[in-house]
Image 1: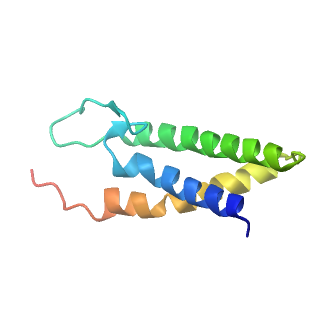
Image 2: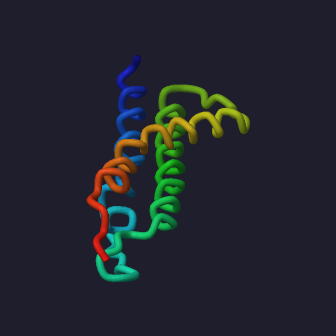
Length: 105
């Protein structure tokens, strides 16, 4: 695998986990909590995941253009790469939702 390919895979892994590992929107904007003790809402995390997928795709497209001709892709390519991006997000989701202690009321 080329260095560019390794870079894109590592970038996708980091960006897929970022929404679940930080309480800031896109890693920099603080989000006020909805209720006391409640983390950033899942909707914000899914929005961040979609935006980070687009960022990863744009970086990959730019690097592909610098290396030569850009290959045309159709919808199955984007579906498969988004599913791979969701699989990359599994460790962050696990830490955020499955390993946290239960709330005591």
